[in-house]
Length: 98
Image 1 (cartoon, rainbow, N blue to C red):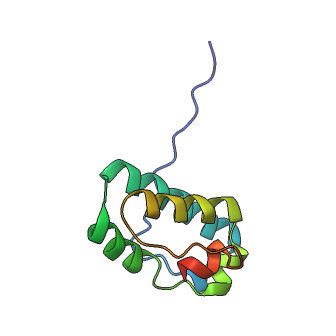
Image 2 (image 1 turned 60 degrees about the vertical axis):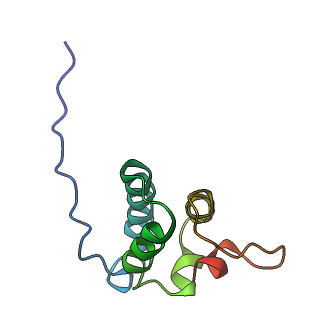
């Protein structure tokens, strides 16, 4: 019989501040928010308002230093659910989100 793994409690992300965390934690926060936005089904202005609140401590450099796959997924998710996010050939997803 396999040993049962102890399940860690989910982290409280409510007071998250990017400048106070390392890049791994920032990436974990972005992954958490991607999942949360999908599960709660935020759309349009509700999603935009929540995004602004959740990522208010992020700078363009924070977005650039994060895992770019997560950043691209975040941009895609925002656009998919009704939030206008600039998409240009010359710009990066990090620039578009900031």
